[in-house]
Image (cartoon, rainbow over all chains, first blue to last red; front, top):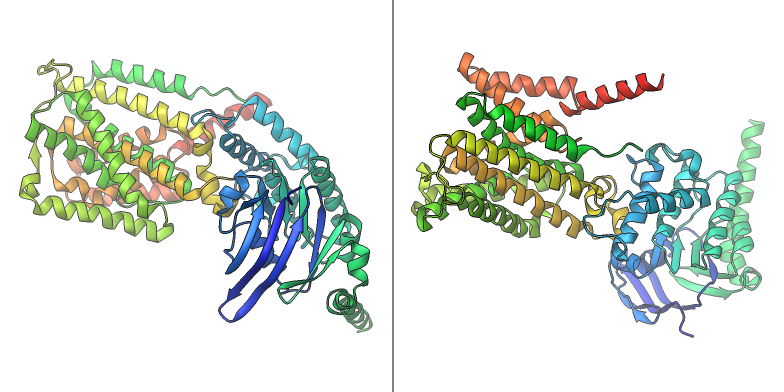
Length: 267
Length: 317
């Protein structure tokens, strides 16, 4: 079977800075993949290249057997490859339900289910919006402007809008960053649950190793712009370089944070 | 959800306006024609405003429509109002499609200044070109309706035509604003990256909206030319564009009826100020704009919205 996403020798340089190099990867349909790595390891650059936000300096990206290198975001969304953002990208002045309605309407439009001058608002589309709001636990916020939503809710809305375009594959850039520790698992339960149910191939960038271990069935570890380990979570987490360069750093940082907190308490 | 009655309201207003036409004096009909000509341009501005861009060069397409009418009359002797209207709309659309190739890529002050630059280029060409009437412009033959010359009631005939064109145009714009591309205007202002990741090309949407606005500006130019009977380069001058922006602010962008209310108000204020305080009419107009920005930042249309909200609140209690 053709992999849904295949990346060949991907490289991205900004002047003399190498942000990504020698990235080679095959992703099978239905996989849930966690992407880990320290800050600046090239995770977001990788996501940006696959989703058309950045053009790679060299290399190829294939999606469902088709070369999509350098295609624009709107073209990728149309063929079923989309993403969410580290900083939620929503329409701040519109209500939560209108945000989703825009996504549903755009999707119906490019999938040929909505005529050029057909009104955006229709019973069928409004029902679909309601269904998505329920799936992502956004009903209580339906009428609130998206710009006033709490961070965690706004990130869910961002993901809900991406999923509204009925993708086959989605890349989530740090879905839990900026979200309080107690909300993290709620958000991931919602999101991964809904994505699995729709059998959408998922890649998510994540710093919290507990979350990666719990939701991913495959992990990619990034260091210095390239993948140093790729496999089942237990395999990757036991890799000595991953422990040293990624997990180790997290442990160390957590220890430092604890130390700082103790000192602050004592002071 | 409330049922959308906009089209029914537009038709009622148009019927009322046509009926009023038979009792109002000619100078008022002329004033209304000028106002409708401007309102048609502002209808397009309303769309661009929702997208978050403010053109200071919409006079380019307005003049395009006016000059299409004038030149077809001058060189080909064409006077049929329907034919001239269609050509004016086409000219507005084609000019904005060309300008849009560049304009669709710019936002903010760059968009505003670039649109103004384009219109000033046309102004320069019109002023310098003898064949286009130079600074004197072109005098127009009176238009005919399917071979009929409405000599006796010319102003009234033009008025009824303008009202009907205004009705069709505002209804069409309303339908567009409810469609997916029309509803995406505000999202474009809010977050272009998100629009692209919804599978829509912002540049293509902006280009389309510019063309639509250009078509309406061309229609506005035609209506103005029919009624005034004369066109000159002033139609393309940047202060003409400024007037359209003025009306957009005064009117608000809440409804397709707003440009007509705003344009009528603008013409009334201007005419009264010019009649009673001829030395200071600009000050009066400026004061009106200031008052509108301070007290009605949502434009005149926000008065209707407020009234409606109060009514529905009363109904709830």
